[in-house]
Image (cartoon, rainbow, N blue to C red; front, side, top):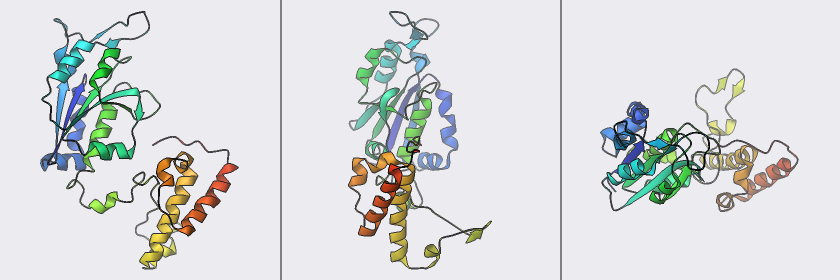
Amino acid sequence: MDKVNFDVVSLYPNAFDNLNNMGVITRAIKNQLISINIINLREYGEGSYKQVDDLPYGGGSGMLLKPEPIFNAFESIQKFDNNVTLLMTPQGKVIKQNDLSRWSNYDQVILICGQYEGFDERVRCIADEEVSLGDFILTGGEIPAMSIINGVTRLIPGTLGDINSLVSESHNNGLLEYPQYTRPAKFRGMEVPSILLSGNHKEIYDWREREMIKRTSNRRNDLIASKNFKNVPVSKRAKEDKNDSMRFRIVNEYDNYPDW
């Protein structure tokens, strides 16, 4: 795969202008690792007013995006053989890191942004997947679409200066990343853990492994029970840390943390 091509159907195409001013995205565009094509949904509206929305059948508040403009905009896109179409909707599956990794293997990612109170139900048949940033409502699908473009782009080889920086990031292996420090070694009474200054790479590795377990169990108890976490290979010492943390968490009433 030489490039990931993003095609975005949106009623507010100008919302994506800032993507050209983000370091990683800008570099990926310049190096032809990605392309971003924004399709203005308004151009496919009906009549002299370019209507894209209408009242819902059966009554109700707000307006719905009509199916015709979305279908016409979608069909105007030249399709690659290896493509996936994603529909931005709060009813969709919450995006995880492994989704971004999976989508980075496509030659083309088509993103359809919802708006207003949503879209005509018949639009759903276009999409391969319906996706969401989380269990909350935004004014439209533009921010989720930009998040997907950002998250997928940084996984493309050649985008980041150091590809190894992706290895231990939060969520890549079902765990949150370990604490990180840089100079100075002491700042306002807060000191860098001595193990990180020891130069003993084996002990540093073990410490980081334990800290990932501890941080995940303290901050994201939902990940502890997940399949991904159960499949993570950890040392006997790390397993003991996890068990200790789990025993502590049983009596902790603050178990619910928001997704971020």
